[in-house]
Image 1 (cartoon, rainbow, N blue to C red):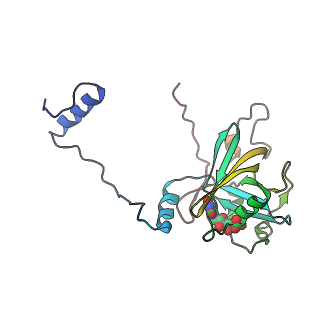
Image 2: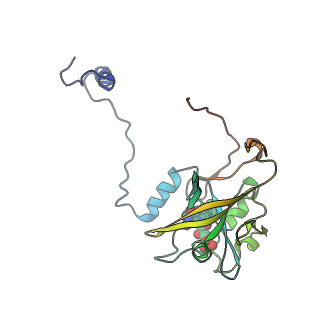
Image 3: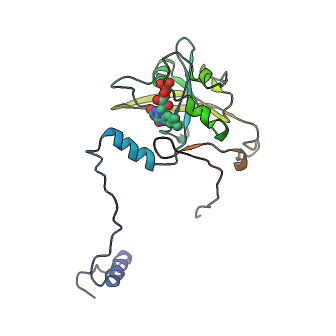
Length: 232
Ligand SMILES: Cc1cc2nc3c(=O)[nH]c(=O)nc-3n(C[C@H](O)[C@H](O)[C@H](O)COP(=O)(O)O)c2cc1C
C-alpha cells in the first residue's frame, strides 16, 4: 500500500480503494462551471439563482392600502418556515433603492396580508397580476378575478384560489434591495375536496399548485407526484 494512503478507519479505507482504483493518480473530479457570485452582477445572480433553485411555490399575495384598495401580486421567493408558530415568508424586491413594491408598502401600513395559492386553472390570471399598475389600481379587477372577505383580517382573499392563508406581519427585514416579509398564519381557507375533514390529509389528485421554474417565464405542473417513505 503506498505510504501516502490514509490510515485505517472507514473513510480512510474508502479513500484507499479509490487511490488504488485510479493507479495512484487522483480520481477524476466531475468538472463543472464555477461562478464567482461576489463579482457577478445582481441581474445575473438573479438569473442563476432563480433558475437553479426550483421548483418554488408561489405566494399570490393580496393586501389592502389605507383606503381599502385591494392589491395582488405573485412572489416566488416564498416558503413556509415552521408550524409552531405557523410562519411564512416571502421577498418582494425593492422597485429602486428604498422604494418598496405596493405589496410591501401595504403590509408596512396594515401589518397583514393573504397568501393565496394558484393552481393550473388560474395560472395565467395569477401571472397577469404581476403587471405593475399605478398604486391604488387593482390587478384583481384587471385580471377578471373576484375577492371575498377574509375571516380575521381586512385584506381579502382571492375567491378563485384553492387555498388562502390569512397572515399578520411578524417582521420585515430589509436586506439591501430585498425585503423579507415574515408572517404568522391565523386562518386558512381550503376549497372543499382537498383536505379530509377528519384527518386533514390531502387528496393529491385534487390539488395541483403551480411551481416556478427557470427565469424568466417557466413554470411546472405538479400532477406527477410520487411517494418516497423516509427511513425510520
Ligand atoms: C410567478 C411570479 C413570481 C414573482 N416573484 C417575485 C418575487 O419573489 N419577488 C419580487 O419582488 N417580485 C416577484 N415577481 C414580480 C412581482 O409580482 C411584480 O413586481 C409585481 O408588479 C409586484 O406588485 P406590487 O407592486 O403590486 O406589489 C414575480 C412575478 C411572477 C409572475
